[in-house]
Structures are given as C-alpha cells and as structure tokens.
Image (tube, rainbow, N blue to C red):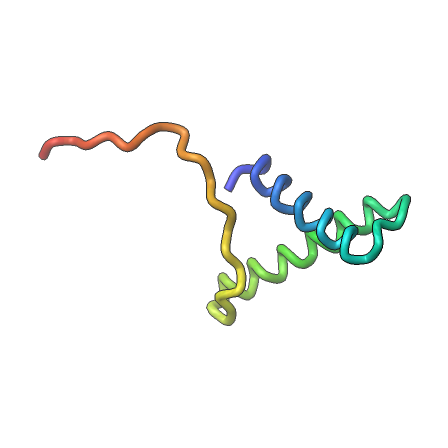
Length: 70
C-alpha cells in the first residue's frame, strides 16, 4: 500500500467519523488522528491473526501481468 492509498483510506475513514458525529466544525485534525488510530489498531490485530475485520483497499495495478514462457 502506498502512502497515497493509505492517506486516501484514512481520509475516507475520517470523513465517515465526522459525518456520523454530526459534521462539527474545526475538528479535522482530531478526526484524522482518530481514523489513524483505528486503522493502526485494525492492522495490528490483522497482522497478529486475531481479527479478519480489516480488509485493505483494492489497489490499482500499475502494469498488466506479463506471462513468461518457461
């Protein structure tokens, strides 16, 4: 996952938190921090094998696959 994809994922998470709590003004950094903490916790749990709740976002393929003859 690139930094751009991770930032996009956290941004979307932050926006959903903000919307769910009534769109309060002036708390963008707080919602970003909370989204980062949630994503970090989910990643940690997934890496430890304790949870399958985290599903990483689909990443675009930069190049189509190439078959190599053996």
